[in-house]
Amino acid sequence: MCRPSTVYGLQSTAKYFRFERLRVWQLSRVFASKIYKITRKFPKDELFGLISQLRRAAISILLNIAEGADRKSDAEFKRFLRIALTSLEEVVSGLYISLDQGFLDRQEFISVYEDASILAAKLNSLINTLH
Image (tube, rainbow, N blue to C red; front, side, top):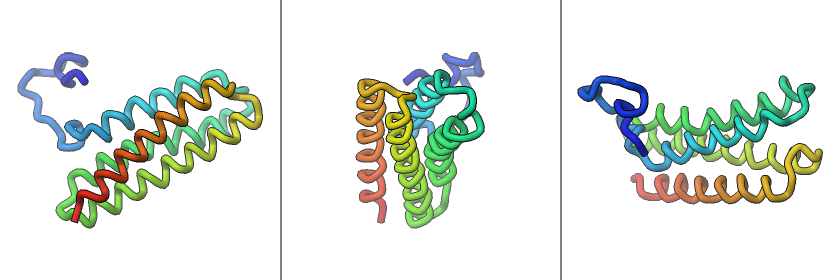
């Protein structure tokens, strides 16, 4: 993953936020972008329904990781990671509905489902390392 300073033209002396160094946050950022991409082709009448719900849940994953990363205790961080995990589960449930309604084909579903599984494993692993 590129440093923010090299991607967005920020000064090289820019301070890093703790969450930016977390691989799980980096993966969740890519995952959220993928959700945005696949929902662009959903029917427009789903804009305020399933599209919005999937996008908000996907964004919630990385936002909760970021918010929790700066907490003062492992217990607080774990709480935010668990919220991120439940948001991921919400996305997966929405993907099933998307598949059932024909908004996603089977291959797209499998691809995103595999990404979600990897992200879930990383979140669980991080949760289990905290005291």
